Image (cartoon, rainbow, N blue to C red; front, side):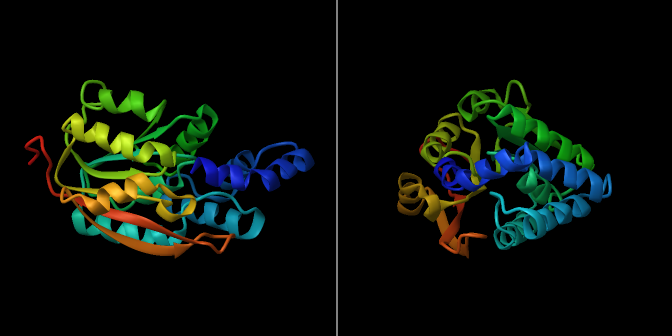
Length: 237
């Protein structure tokens, strides 16, 4: 995701010079002025309209989220973790598919992005979503003690490609995965995370499939990797 955001930062920098504020700020203003408060579908629609009609911006593609939504409807996870919130689009999209009583903790290292995400989540009326500001490597060890989240049912990874594998291994070492945990990783082809995809596709601890999709606005091929944890060396069940 970092290389992806650097790749698209030049046109966004030009817009900042011209308009005086960032794309993220203008998105928030647009959503607040057009979406219906308390209506998650309205918030998502406003974000989509902003991207389609106003300015292109980094965001998970709708086709990917539709696929993820199907997975969530089928598996009905209760304890959910997202690494890489950005502005909260995927968190809101995820939350609308979760069963009653489910929780989603979403982690964002950038304070400004986390602040915007919190506002969008609040506007969507999703009190089951908690936006946590910090490094994933710092938050993961505190999931149980500080956030009362034990075994994960669902994990979405969409932060820094170089951290996909270390964070997954950290979750394994802390026994936070159970047999059947669903793990979805975005941008596995573009910008890519070769060590991660090699691990989840090459280990019998995981059953993995890819869902291919073109990147909005760029036309390059990407994919999400959807993995199911089969249990590992720690006796996970």
